[in-house]
Image (cartoon, rainbow, N blue to C red; front, side, top):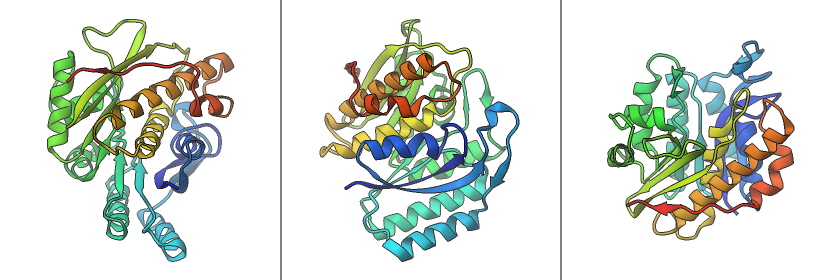
Length: 292
């Protein structure tokens, strides 16, 4: 069985961070050890929240306890998301190193959460540079959105060629797989949203119908990175050949199903519970198109 450590935020109410990642990982057949970097009442998009940010020492202490109980040899991947500051980032990087020492084949899927188109950066000063210079080079898989790709890949993203070039520059720094989780470029259909997958073996693009919300639900990026990692690990072909392309399709299908359930529910939170069966077996298929 695939065993993943997911190091992310946690909320008591709603679905972001580990709350958006753990259930789909489990439903897709993964054993998950969740290590929380914060525990808040709800995500910060509501404006008001309560709770506590955990220290890097807390993260290390929890991993110590897990390692003493079960060891880390069977961990096949580490998934990480939002990092509140550089100290937490360094602790996550140390955790990845510890897992790789026990299992050199373990993957790190890093969601480089920093900002978004229209909002700019929303993380603390220094995090974008640390993510670019320290986290991304050590990761096997990165899942930036379009804004984050432009920063990490050192270039404007307005065309497919620019997106592919930026992803290739990113891979030159270390990651083997780059999944661009949202892409709107010059030839994108206005009623669709694209994702782009870039690997040394090839690049694929996929489009799904756009679903609009009065207030877009938080946590979609956390969900997307988790599902993509689970699907990638499920494919025996690993990170080459057609494995990533099918993982891209599965991820797009699961995300579209989740958005459909969320729209029907009329909620600001992802309708993860009602969508869980369709996450595992989506009713609608989408085809990835090879672009390189």
